[in-house]
Image (cartoon, rainbow over all chains, first blue to last red; front, side, top):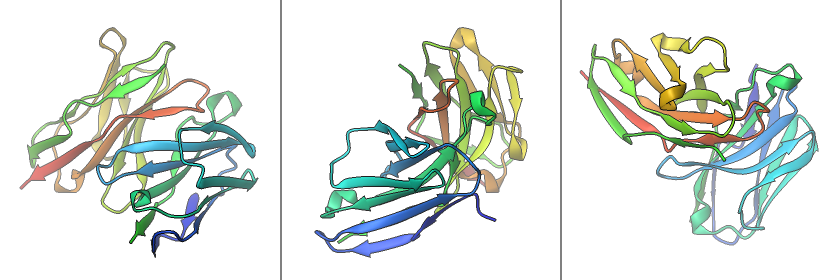
Length: 116
Length: 113
């Protein structure tokens, strides 16, 4: 049973379109994240939610809008896609050690977005 | 503020040779430290972590890392490289609250037969 699952695994779309990536974790974690990994493998934090509340919002264009309907889900919607949005997007979750967690990040398999 | 520096974006070793991947961190508070591995077209998988217990941490697949506070280092080692170790390796640091993680830029490990 997959701990952090995200769909779809691959997206290919045209510039200007809107797309969404869904993420679900069944670990009971309070905190979820979206990371962007570019072609050079650099990992950049985009957003972090704790119990459905936004706690980290890095410098990301407002075309990117996260939404957390409950603490097990964190979706990412991207409007007006641009070529530079092509990347692999990773969802992750964690439970900090102060709240009976193990402290590390658990990652999904990634969603590879290609904008043509 | 916390940050992580991984020295060497590409490391090549012969099969059976020692693997050494370097990681230095800066942190104003005692950190948690992690090594993750990413195989091609996959997500990141935890190799090992340091959370202020033993300074020598053993992980999966024969890897280990030593926390050295005086050197602010957390280098990853494996005595004998295997072809299956070829992957991207990331060092990361978090504070003890575990809400913010800072990743290094990654080291690509190639194993030469």
